[in-house]
Image 1 (cartoon, rainbow, N blue to C red):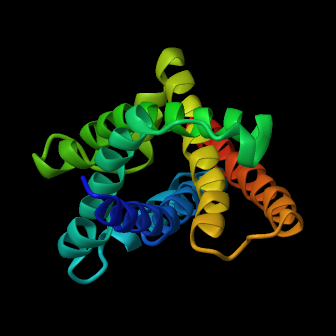
Image 2 (cartoon, one colour):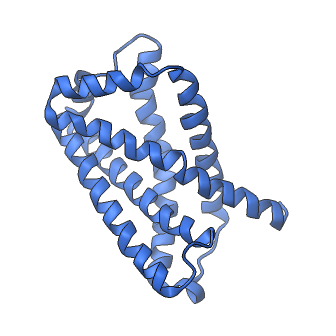
Image 3 (cartoon, helix red, strand yellow):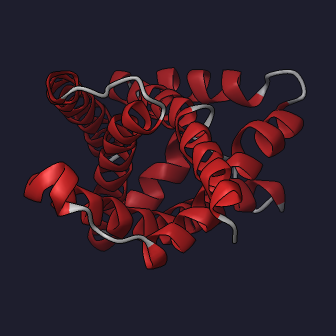
Length: 203
């Protein structure tokens, strides 16, 4: 792959990771958080999202296709990219490695989550509602798997925002990158709390 082509593929990968995939992840966690208000509140919020006009087309073109490109090209990056300690230092390189690890794990986690929920609903086996998630998470191992999955997703998104800001030239100075680190840390913690609280509400 030529350097110019790879540059644009990486830009597209970075952009899709924030818009629309990152926005969907945040929205998905917020909808799930309605479970903390009880079964009826979650089913109502979930039902509203499922009843949106052209929902199938929205899922395909706004969620699944961007997510698949981001995932598969991300795997390529994970196995070909190298650390850059001279430019970013030790912490950033640890986060760089963790970004790749969580990305690979999320490919497995998301595939399993889609199979357990959307695929089961598509074939008419189950309905996506509060009881479905309560049944899935009644298994302690599955609950642990989902908690790790949610935290991996929130870290991957938050750290991806930091990388996006740098690669798109928004944060170039050391001070702006330091501020971005604090902001993305807050995003990571906030979304993690929202996501884990939602999971525990199903138990």
